[in-house]
Length: 321
Image (cartoon, rainbow, N blue to C red; front, side):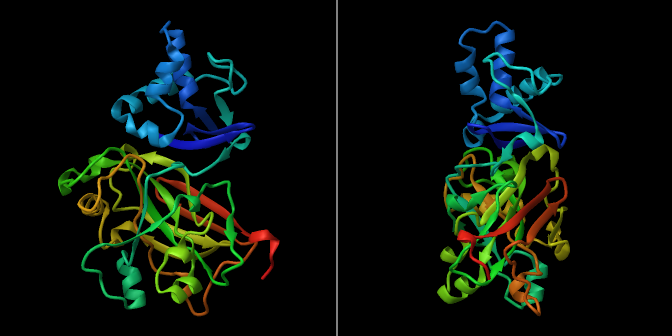
């Protein structure tokens, strides 16, 4: 299943599923419609509890929510976009009618990895970290495939970082390595946008990594059953059609199960937590000459099985460089 958070007209972001590439289904309204057809009393309240319209709340429902979401999709499989659900509201949309945001809107935490690709380490000469090196981004940085990457006035070195991200699906503490993938709800593309001059100046990454819209992700959260081996995925990034990063997740120093287990020994994992697994070689600051992004550029990332994430670079306040 491909989960999205979509916006339509005055309707704020709600949980949907992408079926094919051109159809978005509101899972909460679809499940309402299913329950109403079955004659269930309090169908709206039941749908709100079992298939809530927010990704993080949905993931907290575990297998019951996933199973109900599949029932909802089956219920409206033949719905035309113009057909209304039991609440008198549209629940099926063409892709071009909606705006897609970050697939997870309000995670408790966004954890990022640095120096976690063997090809990056070989290219830069940095030592292999003896344990995973983590840092954090804030929720304000999250944006989706229909949002721009904002070029802040404060920087002159705007860099890209193509990354595989996974999202936690259930609460966990001290997770054994052999059970780690059971805690992963799904995977998505993540761009760890960075102001390289600021991270160099500050000698730490918080300011340079967490401006508004510095964490584009999506276009959807692909459920883990559709990605049986996250350690064999091609990762590619282009700016204006020029291939600048080209790797595979087999190059990860610390793979997904290792990261789940490691992080769960630091803090209790919660549904909706986002973990970006690090970026391969080919960064803008390491190229000669550097390939920093400019206002008007298009940054595009593709990861096997996860689709394509493409964002335009837009100058903050219309400033030019």
